[in-house]
Image (cartoon, rainbow, N blue to C red):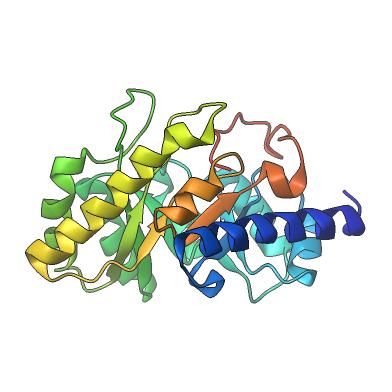
Length: 241
């Protein structure tokens, strides 16, 4: 992708975010744009970074392992795809944030590995608000218990919640799921006193209702980079941008 095309796409996405913020009475500075860089080569990541993006998300540890060392330093990397337990060691080494923590067992493995590597790690609890069998994540009624358990970890910091709405041609159909995630976060805060500032929700097709319902991170791939490609490792990817 040419730099001028990428620059145009980034500006269009930011305009969409700003308009959604205006509609909901929010400051645009309260929303961060994460570039879902799955299947995109290091050169495109660096081009996006040169245009001001700093947050990048990968779906597969195998692809991230090959890509991240080839990208410029100073970027913040988020794991946004399902994390297999046998990939925890590499994930802790590669990523600053794991957004897709979907079980206590996975969190315990991350805690142990972070201790072994001598680092701290930010995590989000992935929530399956829609109940779709094809999606990973905690059931909503289990998130409060997990949040309390996670608050006891010394190496992990639970910063918020993440979800994926069911796909629809109509972005408004995603709004109830985004609203539910925000309400769930607020319910947990009221019941436990835990501060969970981040809500990672909304992608290329439904970012407006996500922002209007309180998203702090929007995961965008296609609207920035164009149609998805096959992963650089040849693996198929779950759609997260």
